[in-house]
Amino acid sequence: MDEHDPRFGALPNEDENETAADEEVLGAQIAAAGLRPPIPPEALAALAATARAALRAQGAPEKPIENAARTPRTSHGWRRAAVFAASAALLLAALGFGWFTFKSGPSSFQSGSVAAVVEQTTGRLEMEIGKGYWRQVVVGERLPKGVRLRTESGALAALRMAGGATVRVDALSRVQLLSAGALRLDRGALYADTGFEQPGGPALEVRTAFGTVRHVGTQFEVRWIDGGRPTVRVRVREGSVAVEGGGRSYRAAAGEEISVRSDGEVARAQVPGYGAGWEWMMDAAGGLEIEGQTLGQVLDRVQRETGWRVRFADSGVEAAARRIVLHGGVGALRPDQAAFAILPSAGFEGELEGGVLVVRVKTPS
Amino acid sequence: MSENRAGGTVVTVYFEDRALAARMRSGDEAAFAMFAERCIGPLYRFASSRLGGDPELALEIAQTTMTKALSNLASYRGEAALLTWLCSCCRNEIRMHFRRKQSAPDEVELTEDLKPSAGFEGAATDDAEADLLRKEEALQVHMALDGLPEHYARALEWKYVERLPVAEIAARLGLQLKAAESLLSRARASFRGSYDKTTAAVHIAARSVLGKVDHGRT
Image (tube, rainbow over all chains, first blue to last red; front, side):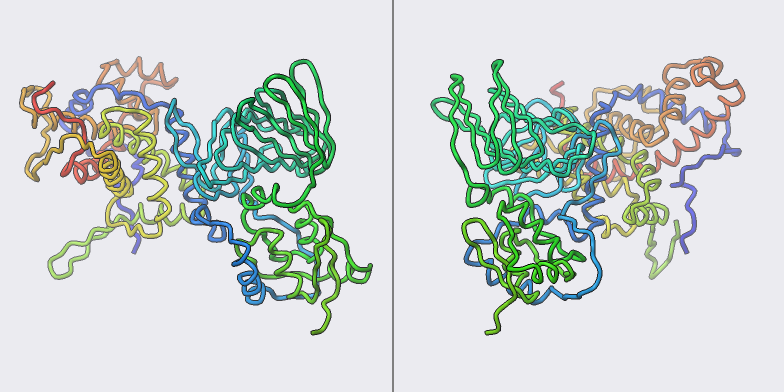
């Protein structure tokens, strides 16, 4: 049925029936057209990257492009959705252990020129393709070194750096990917989780107008604050960072924030590692993937994403949680929302007290 | 290709392109490479030719086209060549772009019987339609060359545009004379196949050209 059509094949063989007249006509055609105006190689590369990304998005139904339009649920709506999602999707089995993966998408960095891969978008993430020209970036697209990105109002994005770190980009941000381990923040905010950096790889650093933020195994947010005196604020959730600029270095540890103003003034404050100030970066991450993961692994991830500390009521509860394997999905629920959806379905209940999620066996009602 | 006659209607299916699309959807890297070689350059050139040579806008439109078309690759039935399908999508994107800007450039309708002829180069005329046909023919040739392996395309340009002797082409390609002649023969055969596809791609869009055609204003 699928017979080969020689007119549209690669035609690698010589045409033995070609006459001199045939060649003359063809030669005249090509001559009349003249030399081809060159196509910029970067345009061809960008088009190839776009084609790959579109195909990848099409071939991975669990992370389609439509996910880009996903909007966070409201606090009123998500609980009902959570119960529904969890009830419908969760099947529990007390067998085996899976390998936890967050909804990470392809993290293929075959080319050394790739700085990051887009893992998730909500709203419009754009890259600059020429001076003043921007185009939308899709999930799965590989971003080259040097590229400038921007998010519009309400848009969020999650990137996986080639060095392994996870970076979330807040709305109305301007970021440049300098290399596999370095970014420049010119506006808005980004959140970095360097816990997954490859050993021996480049340690992530964030450069700003007022200094460079370097980390020591950490989760942190860098925010550019416009105003009378522009300020770069760094909040540390885990580990510690050093903000270096103007020949000086300031360190901040977990639970601290440090603000460096344009006039060089530095201010410090205490900041909790959980709560409303961190929610935007959970929205940026998209849904939590639970298929094949143990409840314990999911709770570990919830802990890392929310900044909460998970405490089991006793060792028996923890052992049980680490044996239970989850199947299904929780849709677009954020990690904090997903936790309360999953626990009851698995026979547990959770109570949040001052940033500590206490997990215990569900009390019969 | 197979032709089935049903009630006098000829149904044309581009089996090879349909198979290529299916392989691309399944993640076949070789299929993607073939697609990239055959379609990416011609698509960009098509967009550029319809947008007055604006490189940034051409890239933006071509990327939008690529994203939308490949996201709907499952809907491709092989009723036109892949390149034709892409150019058709591109034409729609260009139309929407100008509609959004509400600044569509002049539209030029080409009638079905306006076919470019092989001897067009000697028939220089001020006539706008003839000028348009000449440009369309050049575009078609350039797109066909873009759809070839680059050393084939360069060899053809060296021979027929720059009129280099085969010995010089052989030297540039690092080949013996006989091998260069053989390569040129294969390149011509490939060009004919590629040109047939660009004919359809360009003409399907030429019916409603949204290029910058100035009627006697240039």
